[in-house]
Amino acid sequence: MVSALQPRISPGRLRELGPLNWVVWQVLSRAAGTGDAHLFSTLGRTRGLFRGWLHYSGKLMPGGRLPRHESELVIIRVAHLRGCDYEMDHHIRLGKRAGVTADILERLREGPDAAGWSDKHRALLAAVDQLVRTRDLDDDTWAELAKHYDERSLIEIVLLINQYDGLAATITALRIQRDGL
Image (cartoon, rainbow, N blue to C red; front, side):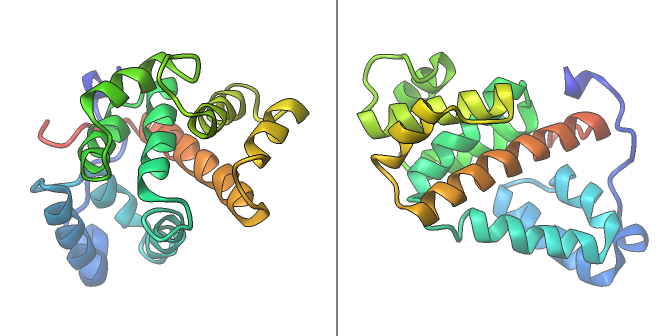
């Protein structure tokens, strides 16, 4: 489990982050409801790369075309599949604001075959599972997803899944500890 291991790179402070990233880290930590959002105080050490990554990430979520509820379904499912507690902690909180109830959260843990999903959400979650597990989508999964989303949204879904899968890998590899630890 990630939280039981020592971070490979400790969260930065003003000296390591620089003044701009230090301010960004402070603002994002408050928005996340924590005194130190370890993800941002660690990645902030990369200076300009961090800001570029934030811009890209923000264009996918919260600034993407997908409804916020659907973005959170994708992200929480990725976090579950990757066993990334840090990502799960943050997106359970964000998901609640976007209508992810305790019942939906339990179904997300079960996956796309759980009872109660609409055809659209079942197709979305099946795509998450397949892309995370195989790094591709077969033609049947793609066709089912394409019944519910236009081309631009399909591209965004693939980017969103991969963004949060990659972020989970980054959190794991750097051993970023859960906030409050």
